[in-house]
Image (tube, rainbow over all chains, first blue to last red; front, side, top):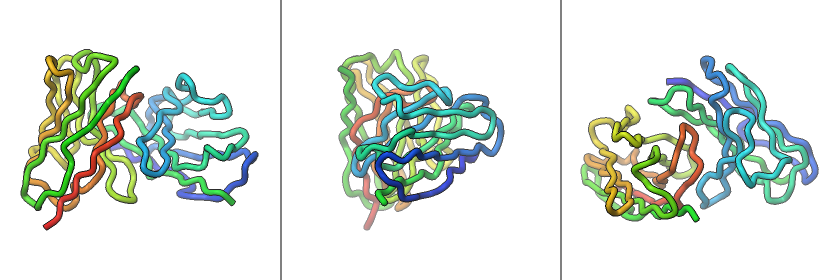
Length: 108
Length: 115
């Protein structure tokens, strides 16, 4: 199975900061990558698919980039509602979909 | 409006069986890829199973041979039959509409496997 590694696993940031989360695949996955946001006690929410396509309704401060094995999720200006855990997910290997371990963004 | 509502979770002893349901509204289950994804307490997300619109089904190695995904088109409902449950199956189980990535999620139902 394709292994997805996120970094960092957690960090603290302040409102207004620009933050970047990294996701690395153990083998090339082209652009078959999605990003999700999850808040405590809630289901994940799709933010980005195809590595850089913003899901409808998601604020434009979220952006994604990358292809192959290295990907990033960037939040250009962190808002209070953005403190959450973020997951990447590959769907290149359709019969063995895998997620990264998650990155928790906490308030500094 | 698209809605997914999971039911059927609860406390079950190891070795027991449970069937989860996911009632969908706002779209047709049989025309979509539908998945189950789980999350153990305090842990990350794990894909469990998928059923394609054509009816093909696939499973994670961790549940293969024990879990069965199915759907009832007349009820527009997705199911997950879970047999031979183990402690490590304890998790919140989400149903999701997918296209590789998951763009609609239910609220989840908690399954606790414990004696």
